[in-house]
Amino acid sequence: MPSPHFTITVLGSGTSVGVPTIGCHCSVCTSSDPRDNRLRPSILVTHGERNILIDTTPDFRTQALRARISHLDAVIFTHSHADHIMGLDDVRPFNFRQRGQIPIFAAPDTMSSIHRCFQYIFDGVKRESNVPQLDARIIDGAPFDVFGLEFVPIPVLHGRQTIYGFRFGDAAYLTDHSEIPESSLDLLAGLDVLFLDALRYKPHPTHSTVDRSTKTVERLNPRRAFFTHICHDLGHERAESMLPPNIRLAYDGLEIHVA
Ligand SMILES: [Zn+2]
Ligand SMILES: [Zn+2]
Ligand SMILES: [Zn+2]
Image 1 (cartoon, rainbow, N blue to C red):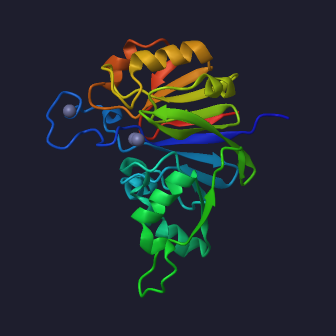
Image 2 (image 1 turned 90 degrees about the vertical axis):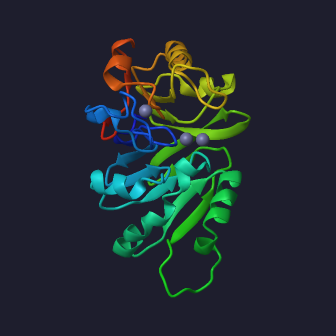
Image 3 (image 1 turned 180 degrees about the vertical axis):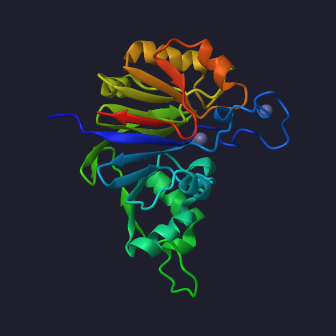
């Protein structure tokens, strides 16, 4: 079967606090290079006419306006940390325009956290104001279809927690992780595009580093790799100049075509 074609738009390439970081005056936070402005981590996968979002960050409204997203067909969640879910309420304008529920996909623990954080969305109580109209679907670890594109959940360790990255066609998006188990590496052969968490140079208990993710790229040998979930320790131009040519830093607004 031929590989599916789609476009990946990076909506946010920053770590949980974003770059610039509140109150910081370092050279990256005050940089004039637009690639050093990083909203919270998320991508949009456009497959045919369908827009599939991975994670709803606290910056989702800004990201949707900036990327001129005119419709939203599905949301897939990696995990329930605040930087990955807190923009969920901002899908409401898509509900108004589309007049239907939007399916959201998440693992059981992630979905129950989303239900707890956004209780008013799911409690079925009739309200005077509008709440997001969502169709919650549980990911059980098996590949699942989203409007004709198959997503394969890739378990990764995010500190002590196991969360999901996703492979779709010849691309994979592995945000927050500190370790990729062997059994998951086996699911990542033959990639065209690989996104990896690379928070900074210094080790971190729940995130990968530039060094660690460079080793993952050497091991998996995708055609192109992009680092994301980046903090203000990395200035785009300088950090990229020290990387091999097949590894680039993702930046907000980057569009990648996978054919
Ligand atoms: Zn995160
Ligand atoms: Zn800074
Ligand atoms: Zn996280």
